Amino acid sequence: MPPSALRRALAMALLVALAAFPSACNRQPEGAARVAVIGATPKIVDPAAGPLAIPDAVLLNSVAQGLVRFDARGQIEPGLAERWNVSDDGLSYIFRLASGEWPNGSKVTAHQVARILRRELGGKSNNSIKDTLGAVDEIVAMTDRVLEIRLRAPRPNLLQLLAQPELALVRIGQGSGPFQVSADPQGNLLLLQRTVPGPDGEEGRREEVRLSGTATPAALRDFATGKLDMLLGGTFADLPFARRARLPRNALRFDPVAGLFGLAPARDGGPLADPELRKLLAQAIDREALIAALDVPGLVGRATLLEAGLEGVPDPVMPQWMTIPIAERRQALITEADRLFGRLDRPRITIALPEGPGAQLLYNRLAADWAVLGLQLQRVGRGQPADLRLIDEVAPSTSPAWFLRQFRCAVAPICDAEADPLLDAARTAPVAAQRAALLAEAARKMDDSQLFIPIAAPIRWSLVSGRIEGFAGNRFGIHTLTSLDQKLNREGAR
Image (cartoon, rainbow, N blue to C red; front, top):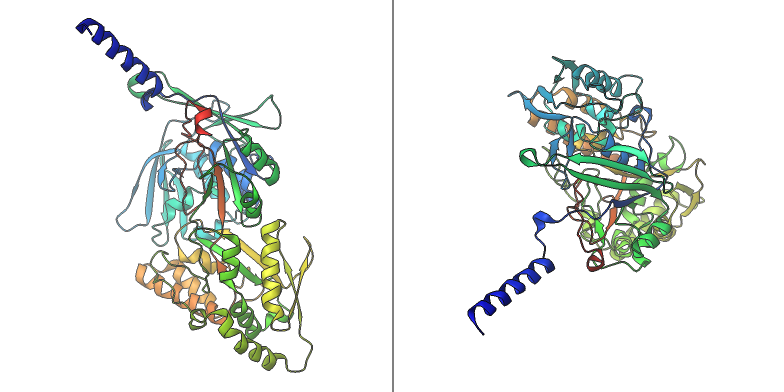
């Protein structure tokens, strides 16, 4: 082949290769990312009104950013604040706000932000993580763009709390971004849009997300047929739906979340007022069988209120009975039940659980395990009185105090009065080691009283298509909708 012909052939081959494998730098999104959240249609709500439904939390996290926010991996990144400084003693956090506007075009000021945060943490607020921020002393606007949060005692996890959707900055029913939201004319959807500035003055890149709320079975059908790119908000209750669906390989993702998943007394009387019965119930649960049925990678049984890896406190020690296989400890449990009740009629225990096949699976497991002891378990409907309730909550930070303060006497129907002063002292302890010792002692008392019957860590799952890049599991189970870069070839990604 002549040299000129050879050069033309090589050039043509290079063009074909470049066409087949476009550079990641030149890859552009193909339309809006289509995201659904299990539950009702997301709406902008006031976090001070009470606990957030998962769809509302996803929306707030996207359109009403806090001072800081989480990236895809659960790490802190700038939100409304472009930077911040922490004093050497850990008692002062100073935030400098980026230039920003509310949707009506008015300027975002530090005075407005301080007022919103003070309201979120005020006495009339029902914000679900307000109690976790009890160390906050003052929130002060120093200038139009500088804000200071002053603490009574150091809190290294403060930024994790400020990034939670419960501290989203909502003003007159609107947020400051990063997305702007509008109704989608195509139906029961929300259209989220933002422009990401390009480098060195280049034209910005536009991001769009179509967000909806949906029931799990419908969402699974839409995902399997390519109508959805991502589904968020899965819990243990609806996990069996996903397990039964025909999904693309690696579509089902689990978050390594921390938190509480277990049972607590729902009233101050009844059979669960007896700590000996609570201990008996805790030890009779076949956690291994339940975890095998749920089939969640890395999920392990738990028997202590605190979990491993929390800030400042040593990892909890597994009780001795957890080292004995359930089949080997059942006879001793039956003997203990006979001692407790003798010839008396065994109590019937009522339990409140959410809807869903996973909740039914949990109920069946508990009913079978406790029936061995001669105890009958009855499931009651929503709003009906019960002896036990399920706690299924993700921890908003790595602080052990969040776990323990769920069971203080001000909020729990059954508590340990000796643990409350320890929690109060820990809140204002100036030395980290002193605070950790107080929290560890409170945890020991609560475990001894069996105020909580732990089962495992919470379960949070999502579905992610091959069209979405940048998704990662994290310990908070919070997923940003920003930078969901999409692959050009949808057909090849499915």
